Amino acid sequence: MAYEYLIYEAASGIATITLNRPKVMNALSLALLRELLQAATRAEDDPAIRALIVTGAGEKAFAAGADIAAFKEMGAAEALGFLEEVQAVMNRIERLKKPVLAAVNGYALGAGCELALSCDMIYAAETAKFGLPEVNLGIIPGAGGTQRLPRRVGGARAKELIYTGEMIDAQEAYRIGLVNRVFPAPELMAGTRNLAERIARKGAVAIESAKRVITEGADLDLKRALALEAKACALCFGTEDKTEGVSAFLEKREPRFKGK
Ligand code: COA
Image (cartoon, protein in one colour):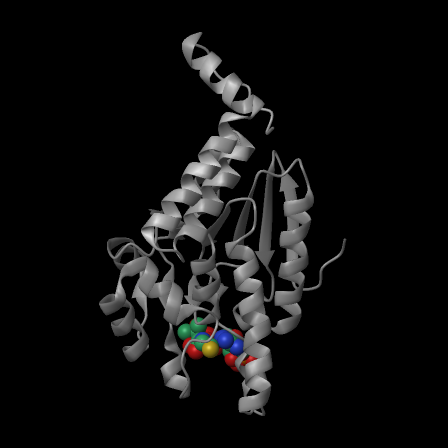
């Protein structure tokens, strides 16, 4: 399948999706986001793929936000339809059955930051910059930022970032828990791939179950979330991977998971 605004590569069980509009800092137009949706579904449906990496083309940007050019003529009614479509893409990434790792190679601003927040983990180059600068345009984040940022870093830190619209560098993003790890820029992709490959070696049912329970559990009260966890864990007990994993441990050998 050919894409106009992204590059899709699959190798060794990992799909890498590269946002590819470098002349405009990989700004997330609707056309790009629709392709991202297709590419994510393609990776989810491919049994050979075990994890996804999302990154940006070029050295400057992961994605510097939604395409501001499209905002000029946009009124409230049109904006609502637009934001619902953008949020649907972010929700799909967040709930994809396979882990999604963001490899942030430069600016992750506005919807670019919100896309990273929809991924399971965020890895950053030392040169990366994060921010939700929407207030500078007289608007607020609308692609999940007001909800996913406080859930990741806490309300007060999220409010400071959103109210000031200021950018933070990768180290500060790491310090506040937005970013999982920071790599020297030339090592970002290899470092992120290494983590994706380590996850890919685990049982697929276990990883999918863990992702689903963590994501869905966050919307529930503790009692219901724990019930969800117990049910999902019990289902794992019925898999061939559990038989293999436990046997391998007792036989002091590496497990060979089949994902069933
Ligand atoms: N939408 C559309 N175009 C964008 C864009 C966006 N979100 N972000 C950058 N671009 C374009 C610029 O307009 C410029 O286009 P031009 O070459 O035709 O003038 C090109 O990308 C390069 O950006 P430029 O601003 O010249 O680069 P810079 O290195 O000086 O600054 C940024 C980089 C990311 C700090 C700056 O582009 C920026 O602030 N972008 C907007 C971020 C934002 O507010 N995002 C939230 C959107 S809701």
